[in-house]
Picture 1 (cartoon, rainbow, N blue to C red):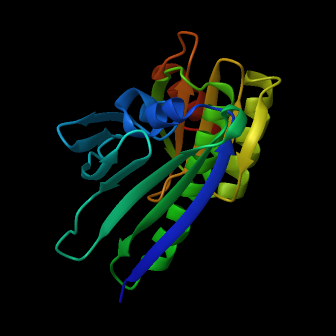
Picture 2: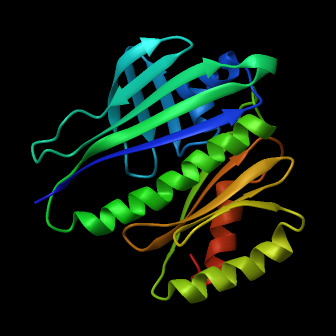
Length: 227
């Protein structure tokens, strides 16, 4: 049957129009709050997130106010588009309006839509956090796929206990049934329930030399699997 969807988010941030444009329409900017590594060039946005490596076409480019990228339709009708509209306000603040739209094919679209919605809420919160606390800076993205989880309630409990010891003083800026976001003065740390079953860490590090291997060890030790 499938499902067509559209969601709208609007945030006001204490950042300039130029800093917001940098965050949404350049590879280093997108790296600093979204997921994986991103490249914006030659009319396309290319992402690398584990084995997921989509290429989107840029369908609106009016710097620094309007940017849109679109996956194009797959043979089964699947597509997703991200649109950003940027408007400056008095006293140096900026309003960013974001529209996510697309189509999910198949009779089992509901589970995927729920995961997409909960994950999307984390990305919006992270972008807001980035533009409040790190605007104009570039993060080093870290992506780690942890153990497969069978009991998510227990996994989140173990993760909370380990984070309290590993990141004392971290500010929790987002939490829902599938995601967790935390901030320190040097990084933003995010944990997500992967749609296919693993715990995923997708962090943005602004200072320090912590590595993906460090966080691989953390997830495996915390959640009970050794690699």
